[in-house]
Amino acid sequence: MIIEETFPSVFAVFDYLQSKGWGGFYHTNPHFEVMQLAENQLVACPMPMNPLYRGQSAIYTPCKPSLYRGNWTKEQSLERLIQLNDFKSILQVNPQIKDLEQAGLVVNYEALAQHYGIATNMMDMTNSPLVAAFFATTRYDAVSDSYSPILNTVSKGIIYFAPTGDFLNFSNNNRIWPIGQEALRRPGEQRAYAMVMDEYSNFNMAHFTFWHNPESSLRVWELTKGGQMFFPFDPMAEKVRIMKKYRIYSLDALKNAYNLNQDFAESFKDARQIMEKRGCTFLSHLPFSYTKEEIRYITDLYHKMYPGSFGNQFL
Image 1 (tube, helix red, strand yellow):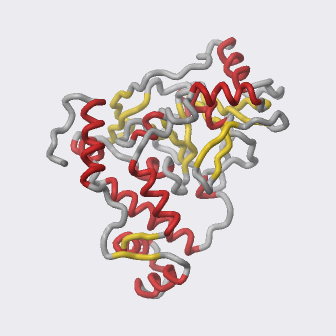
Image 2: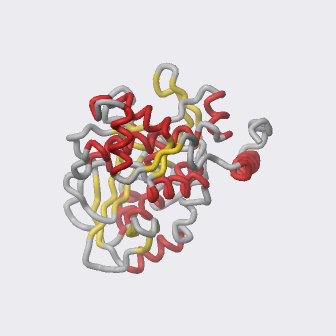
Image 3: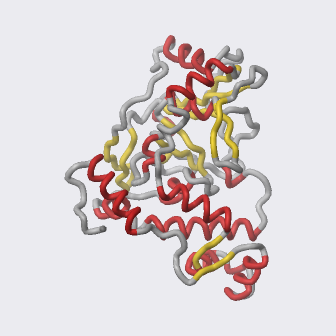
């Protein structure tokens, strides 16, 4: 389903979809169901599972995940793996993560990392038109790590649309993985799914282009409370931001990354020297781990959201 014409606004796109029998512009209350995606893989899925959307404020050809944009040096590739390792190590003491894994659910750490600015081979999707509209009508500033509404009328945005569950094929490389309620609030509020992609593939599904205009952008900005709905307070967001800004990591993360890429250098010692010369700092302990106060905050919030969940053994 590709319409050649450009719609006058992002709202006109969803009006058109509604006229064709699909849901219009809406944002449902959070609702998740545990489903078995493959053998021994239980995941909390944002419901409904279709249709799914993706919003972008600009059109990219080809359209690729962050991992495949630009040419990565071997040092950059290793540093990304280091970031993923520390991200996972920090999360493994999160009581919500413990609760999910003890219940037998799979936690996709890389899919979660995508929502905190670590490059992956995944493209974000959502079951919420409002979430898609927000990312389609705002501009991201990497320096301030913030979004702002697009107020011009001379450029186009795009809404991608997956109408059915045909893409929910978890055995192939180009599969969509539900992220949803996997412990962290940001992907949960964004009703998140992620499509895993190959390096040379192109995110090219049904889509609709629209003209940016101030009225629509400001309306979406107002409905989402300036994006605060989708970016609630989350200690992990600040940890990853500081980790990437100052490039401070654990030695264990470097060891794990090097063990997966031993052709990077002659020895672990050489690998450390190479990365330190390029601005990284390595500590013998895990930087940016959760504080007791943060664990208490996460636990209290989780108890309010899900009464009867885990006790206070993590405090």
